[in-house]
Image (cartoon, rainbow, N blue to C red; front, side):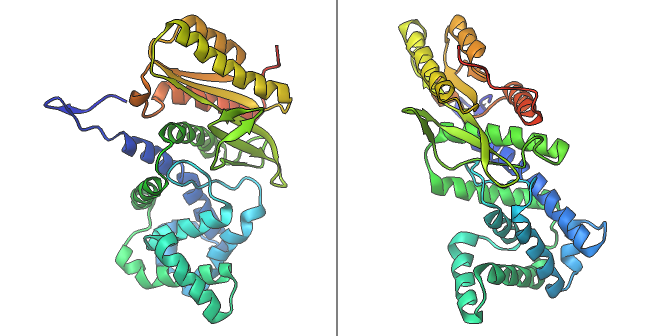
Length: 330
């Protein structure tokens, strides 16, 4: 991302760019909830108008419908501030909480726990009851539930989530790019192609002593992982020479670990290095399934630019369509 300077002082806010990308990936979830509500109430009204008008009991039933579809295929994802996917039930909880209440985990969660005990309801029943009551009580104060307003709220909530997680900046950038690619496909198709769903784990993956910073699990209709997209993120402060060769060796080590396992996983390598040898880059691109190479020092790496994001989107589209297959060991 280009720097924004005034008087030689860098006032750039690269975090906002990343958070806005993640917030935009929540749009399919918003549209999905809208579709569930429209089907439930047999209307083509917007989510905003529905939430402003329905009775509390009817709202509870519509929210509950979204909850119980957790096991259905092709349900969109919702992520935290570093791009890790929430399980569907938690995604529903956060989505409806964000509509009407701040701090759903720190402040609202303990209150719902107390409601569940006091009313002898299950946790989910208490959640649905509390969320519906809050929306009806305060919807006139909120004034609008349109996507544009919701997007601003999500950016704010994701920023708080990111602050609480701390660290792992490079993984966050890679995970954001991967989620963006997956959701770009979903926005266009309304599904995940040959797969019933996706999950972006919240931790690194280790295979044969090689670590992969970011990954995505491609799921079948039973929720089982049938393939993975593995993304090691390699950064180097130094330039060229023998360091470039050692860097390449690290990448090849990750490649060999994946291919030797024979799982059929996809390998997407992200390389951040100033003046890395073009020959080394071509060698990597020839061997891995996809490579994103950034001619930057690690402290300049703040996001995938439009060009690299577009290339990743196209690659992920081919994976989900089934037109791209993992490269064979050679």
